[in-house]
Image (cartoon, rainbow, N blue to C red):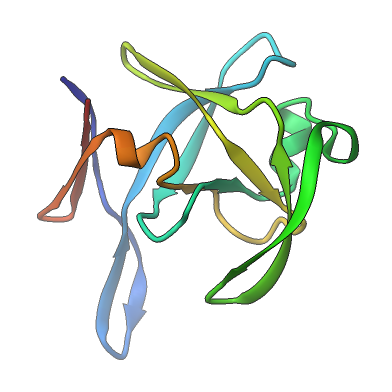
Length: 136
């Protein structure tokens, strides 16, 4: 079943050519809030798990110090401190809904990332002609 189809977003021109990113918009909620929030996320097959910037913890009603495990993670940008939410969040697109693990970065200057663990690894992902398609 197709969950969603979304065109890549143009992010600018560089020396190597035009840059497009695979953003998808999903409804996101936690057990702490009554309504879902639409959040645009980069589909990132290189991310072990989904990550949000710190500012989203407030929108989802999550207290980082009390409801998360703190640990270090390493990536292209080097070492980052993250907060792993103990309960996970709900993501939804159309009729599909899943609880996935989520980490919050200590900073807020990065976009939300949709990662592999219990999410992309359980879906069929097709990127074709600057379009992202997710299917169950």
